[in-house]
Length: 160
Image (tube, rainbow, N blue to C red; front, side):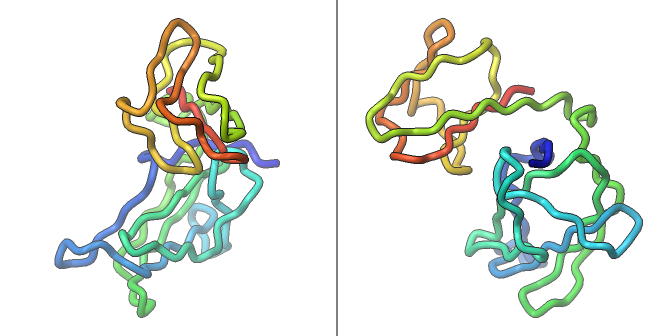
């Protein structure tokens, strides 16, 4: 299993030259300075690799979790026309964005309260979807959701 860190934003989103979401766009990920494909992951567990290229959804978005190395990203349109390339993207946990730690829980469809190891998390995701603050409360070291996360859902608590 790979050690992962969150890309600079929780869910990457890309747009075309007109400002519309880059639906069906392609994000190729390589080892920095090369054209050697390098895996990214669908969530913090580092178990499920994204396809390479990553095909962006209808909103031009994708879940992109990085391993602890440096990457090159190349963004293309759905017609495989290059938009841009960025090299030396830092996937290490000592990136300028700080140390990122993720604590995972698994939903069972009935449990609403989960005990956190420490206070001070930045965000909560269920199956990769950011949870607005109005969907849960935090008391001491317990986060309580207004509705139980679905059975087998992955609950990610992200600390920075």
